Each structure stands twice: as C-alpha cells, then as structure tokens.
Amino acid sequence: MWSTSSLTAEVEKALNETTGNGYEIVSVAFGINIWWMPTAFSTVCK
Image 1 (cartoon, rainbow, N blue to C red):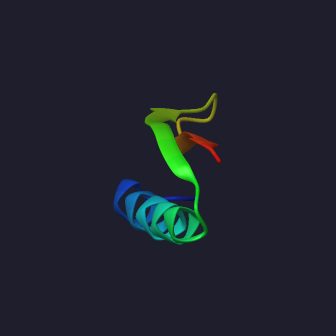
Image 2: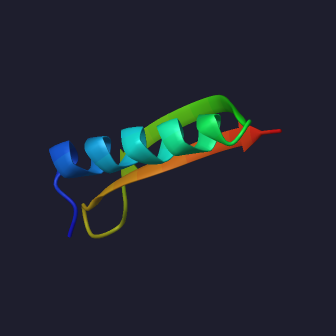
C-alpha cells in the first residue's frame, strides 16, 4: 500500500521522466480509492 509521501515521490519521479521524454503534463490529481488508499492520476500529451 502507498503512503502519501511515497506516492508523491513516485509521481514526481515518473513525471520528471515523462517530461524528459518530450511529453507535456496536463494535470495531476491525488485522491483515495474505495479502500482508502492514496491514488494519483496524471494526464499527459505529446
């Protein structure tokens, strides 16, 4: 299960890698799922 701080770090790492590959970050949203686990959703475009 993700903790909020580890999820944030993983999302930041993934977004940095994604932008390095030429993608643009459109949005990032954090929330929780049905089991109260933190989740992240990102939208990217090329």
